[in-house]
Length: 372
Image (tube, rainbow, N blue to C red; front, side, top):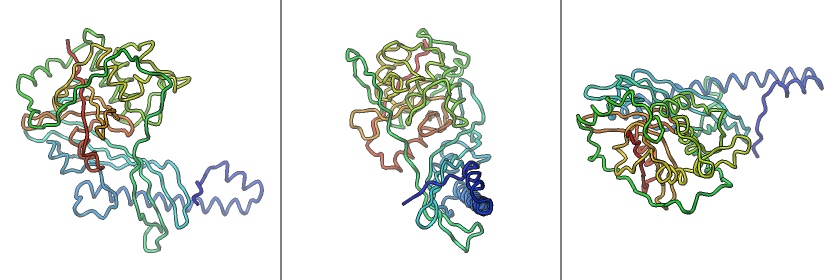
């Protein structure tokens, strides 16, 4: 049976009041364990960084979502990378410990020759991206290790299911959907389209009151450091909640029945706000800010992408497009999302991760931002 460790000052203080000598021993043991586990995480971060640059030579048990070669295939040259670990909890097991750790891969990138980067309405020569997942590291004693422990397994924890809402969508709203193709050959980005994108760098709000620059800037603000805005509710799964926030911050007012949020009672938040499937229905049929996309690779900045992981007719996930990387004339949307946190990752990286995790029968949908 696993017992969650509470290595807190309050626990040590309560022990010291009952038995000062025992408290000193307990504190010393906790500090020694803390030092050892920090060393384990330091070694783990180093191995992941090595894996990023040379995955074929890595001894790491973990598989990174992407590596330097994957970035280069997207036309992006890695200039720096960092692995950050944030411990959530430590659990005692029969033969060691389970460390629940948020692991973030962050990279600094530059455009390779022949590659163009567009972010938040501007053309740029460089960009950043990051990818965060919760990992469970199984740690056991090892006298041969410098830290005294070794990692025997590394499991990535998938996102939670969406929180239920007490609200329902209006049955009178059409549920008609337009699947978007994943055919990369249709993703050419011609000179006329590039000029059009550059001309919209300072574009204001459209006729429906939505400013895509403000929406994208909001998405980047809260994904760059893996944070949630305390002015909004937080759920176990926040993809649609986060997309709704970005669109709302971009200028779209809430709807009193179909698209609103509640911070005092989060479960009263509208399905159209917090549920990916209902969010698609609302954005497509109840706003005038988007049109259907026939190909996901054509998603320009400010667009929304949705995916049904198993093609069962119910959309599971959504994300917002905040940029485009163009290599050899082909567009690659850059996306932000929550649950789990992704900051300025390419669609190719998202698709690779989905395929690596067994999602081989997906249906994608796209809503293109209307500039008029």
